[in-house]
Image (cartoon, rainbow, N blue to C red; front, side, top):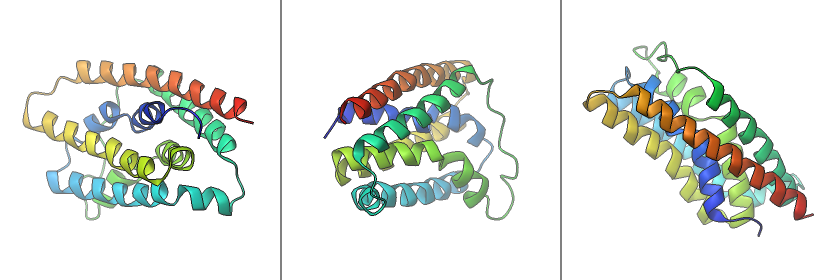
Length: 182
């Protein structure tokens, strides 16, 4: 095993970035947000629990997955640092909105799935499963809290940028762990 499960948690949270993902979900009704989060958790649980088998079947070593996850998460976290405030999602009132746009592409993001795959491969299925629950659950919780009270988008966006900067640092750690594990 390489790296720390705490770094894996930081990277997964930065990949999911609940602060940046919660604000566009505010116009969505509670059941739409919940169903979208459940779909996301289901897919990510499958990724986290089968990470070892998937990397074995693809004949990809853990160091390679760590480097790949670090590069993808680092790039997208840097984009989150530099990106403007996210706009509200369109089509939230339409039939099937929990599937698209809430679950995919908004919550179920490739960088999050890759971060969970790397964590599951490096630290085991339990860590992968915990991370699969953490990011969507925090996003749903934050969106629910913001929907019930007066939104403070500036503070939430600042928190999202801080998490993204931490994600860049965590991604660098993943890349270095992958390089030096070879």
